[in-house]
Image (tube, rainbow, N blue to C red; front, side):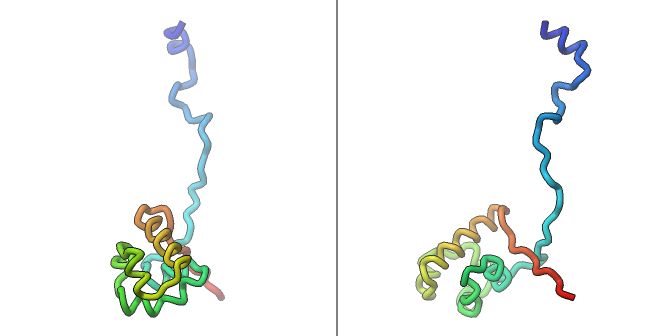
Length: 105
């Protein structure tokens, strides 16, 4: 019975007709991401610490590996530390990037 289905069935067993189709639209992302762009992308009051993080940490790559104790020593409140660490983890995994600001004309 299985051979008959394989030989006479015109539909391929590997067809994708039953699978969900996902959108291929690309979202506008920033080309270069630094500490200010990253924190502005997070929002929720985290952007107030841009100057502090740029002076103490300096580089965006160092921010990606910064731990909570270092952020605590800089005087960043708990909720904002959690947001920074959550989004740095997502950024490292490639699940999130700050969106580009729309060009105002």
